Every structure is written in C-alpha cells, then in structure tokens.
Length: 297
Image 1 (cartoon, one colour):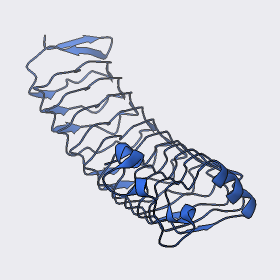
Image 2: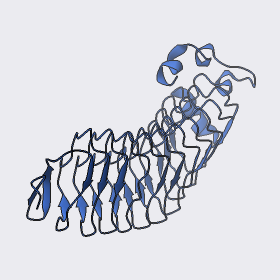
Image 3: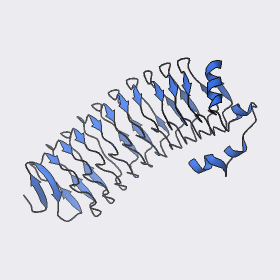
C-alpha cells in the first residue's frame, strides 16, 4: 500500500498524500472518520467497489471537492460525511444505502438534484440542509421517516413528492425553502412540527391529511403566498404563531372550537384573516419591517 494511505485492518484511517485527485486502493472496507477531513485541495475521489461504509466527517469541509464516485457496496454514510463540500455538483447515492445520516450532505451548495435510492428508510437531521442549489428531490416509497431540518434552506427547491409510507416528519423540514409552491403531507403523519414550513414564501397549497392531530408553533410562519388552509377535524391543537405573518391568508376552514383555541395563542397574528377583513393586513407583516422581516428576508 502507498504511504499516502494509513490503513489498518481494512479501515482507511487517514489520507496523507497530495490532496488533488485520489483513487482509494482495493482492500479498503471502511473509510474511517475524518479520513479526508478538511483537505481543501481535494478535487475528486474514486471509491472502489467493496467499501461498505463512509465514516463520520470523512470528507467534511473538503471545499473544493467536485466529484466523488460511490459504489453500490456502500450501505452506510456517516454523520457530516460530506458536510460543507460546497463545490460538489453531482452525486449518485448507491443502491443498498439504508439511511442518510445527520448533516451528511449539508452545505453542498452546488448540488442541483438528489435521487434517493429505494433502499433508504430514513433521512436524518439536516441531511441536505443549506443545499441551496437543489431544485428537485426524488424520495422513494421505502422512506418511512424524515428527521428535522432535512431540507431546510434548500432555497431553489420548488416541488417535492412525499410518498404515503412516510409516517414521521420532523420540525423545520422545509423551513426557508423559499421557492416551494405546494406540498401534500402523507396520510399517517401525525404532527406538523415547529417551523415546518417557516419562511416558505412561495407556498400556495398544502394538503393536510386526516391523520394529523397537531400543528406546532410557527409551523407556517412567514408563508406569505398562502391564501387559504383547510385543517382536518382530527387536529386538536394549533401552536402559538402557527400561521403568523401569512400576509395573504384570508380563509381558514376548521372547527369553531379549534379556531377559538388558535386565536387564543395568536396563531393567525399579522394575517388578513386575523384582521377580520379580506383586505386587512397588519403593518408589521409588510415588507421592510417588523418581527417577520428579521426571521426571513
């Protein structure tokens, strides 16, 4: 083995060579934690077939990494594995991958599309957060849970299809997705969590299933294109400021009892609906000032 590669019992512990274009040698089974961490000169990596795992922080902050080839033998990609690889423009996730870990691709700003293989069951916390170039994401029916903030601040994401097998979606999952226009939440999801759609300025349509029982605090805060919402009868609680700053929200369809509870916690603060007039808009939700402009510009 080349002295460039520090390998022990099949695990690549550290790469010590020139950080430009790297081909990992055969015989490696695991790319260890921090193996390439912070190698800012690294441009491309070829991972050979036979490697089964990419460890935590393996390519963290490789800010000039453009290309990486991941074989189908890889079944695990660790936390922060490609975090901050801001020039990584394309990646094919391997068939056989069962989960996408916490912050695995967060901050990969050049990524434009992601196809998640049909072996993945779980998408971790902030897995694709701050991937501001992503326009499309394909999620397979195998996925059953998406953790909080998984796609937050994917500013160019305009549409996403959530399959019916998903039963759990964490808070803030689409926060700051300013070009997202419509979402259908799958039947089986029970809660629309904190900051779920916060700052989704282009969101016009949301379908909430009968399985949802709660809408948490600030779930729709700052959804300035949302004009109407239908809240199903199974919902028993709406959190504080849930629809605050939805400056075009004029129609809310829900039970009178729930509506009374929602008003008591200012769920519709700074909306025409709260003002009681189809044309009314509170001054603090207008462009250029107030608490809302500080949250999302």
